Length: 399
Image (cartoon, rainbow, N blue to C red; front, side):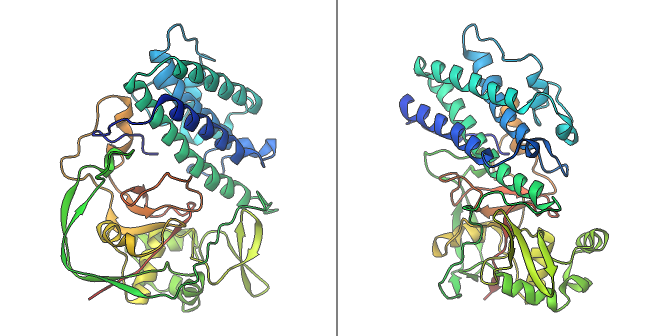
């Protein structure tokens, strides 16, 4: 989660449009949860996956904590302990339930969490109808994008919850994961030069996309298509997971310790690879982009192929030449601040700056990313071993 706003952002959305976006975002989150059974809401299989019930509460707490409790006159909190239950990483806000214990929260109940959502939504709606303060509106928009981030996490977390159920149950027959481009693969040459990097517009962005700076790039060629399941299967069948020469030392330790042999959710059944999807178990679509791989695996594949991953700057400069947005794309860049980056004061300044260590940058978006929530300068970031997100890779050749 990256909780921030463009510091040069000039607020242009009128209150009615902001309120519409807020209400639509709240509704979209609940629509994601609609196919779930009540038992699905509380499960936390691993530390990186939060229960759907917690996501519903946390995104609600954000609006209560940072807007209603601070700016709405005579506002009464819905429950005195919900800030403790639904805070995430905001150390400066107060104590919170340990992340690993989110799955132990049988109470509050799912129905109580939905009551909490209704309470906050209605109070914030009434508050916005009588308030046109630019600072408040800016905070509301941050909260909206925060909830959109959790919509992406909800989908990926739901998939992990159901995909680790021995019955491999379907989530939704209409959720299509495997967008398959039909254009031929080719490599696009980007000329040597000095390029501007970073967000230039006045529309919403996070502070880690600021400020604009110049980078020098050598000439390179980048694929117009993501690596496919068919290509990745060749890596598997050629012993890619058994050859230490393709892997970083830390990655090789991970492969052996975790006994990794395929992307996440792949199952070898009667000699054929199948993949768990949110539509249930399917044969692997060989033409679809590979997904649910770690940076470790992306790097190893590139070494096997004799190519490499792009840096985040190479990706940003080239992105207008290819289709993107169906897989988060691993890059070779460490997540670090841009020149002159300054972490903002207060609790809302915690999220970006304190995570700028030991993580790799991903660019683009995925099939789980809400519409209009990504842009060419968006910088996602995860630890290199993680693969529960819809992650893929694109290759680069040096000229």
